[in-house]
Image 1 (cartoon, one colour):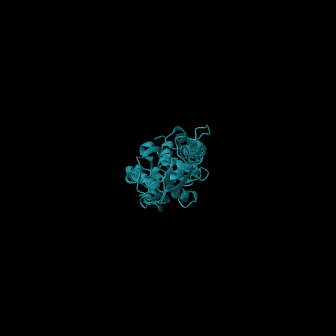
Image 2 (spheres, one colour):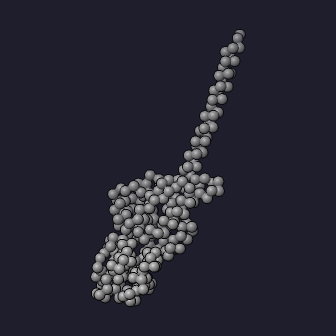
Image 3 (cartoon, one colour):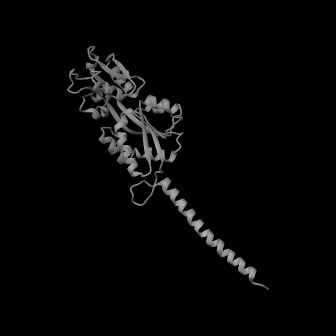
Length: 273
């Protein structure tokens, strides 16, 4: 009986095994690379191993413009390979964008009313910060505005946000509670537009969030409104169900409630939830 066929089969088996080893190794490398790409690394680089990497688009209320730029940079530093792009506008404009199917991954509004109206389009919201109103006036307070009652002076050019805008609703709530009638020279689409009118001298006074006035201390002064007369603004954050990066969006929204994020928000003047 010849041993040639047996030797040939053995040689073929050895050759096949030799070919499969590098393929198996490549498969392991690819799997490891994908896992690192999606989950981050745990090599001490500072990234969060539980946060998948992605290019995220976050719709955020105008009053978060400055602080979220800082927060986004901090999140990207913590999660190399992740990029967070913000689109800032009045909360009512953001709601319209969501309903129209604008491509985005998360939403942060300046009130719970707007967020609640989008429950079919969002995950469960979490309040990440709170805020209060102040009266913004020109630097040096040239019109000598002292309190909320002074806004009723017909000689004073007052600008407010439109009533469908969260800060406009809060302002309306404050004025109605004190039975103060104000005839604004204009009603703006977001809080930054109100602040801009005062900065440019196109208005003598306007109701804005405390944090917005704090971004322009060299151009406007802020007149505090007593807590008993004020309104508290809540900022809920939620993922969008239409997001193509669900896990990454969830990780970012969760991060907004971490001590690191809260420290950034607190530094900008926001209150804890």
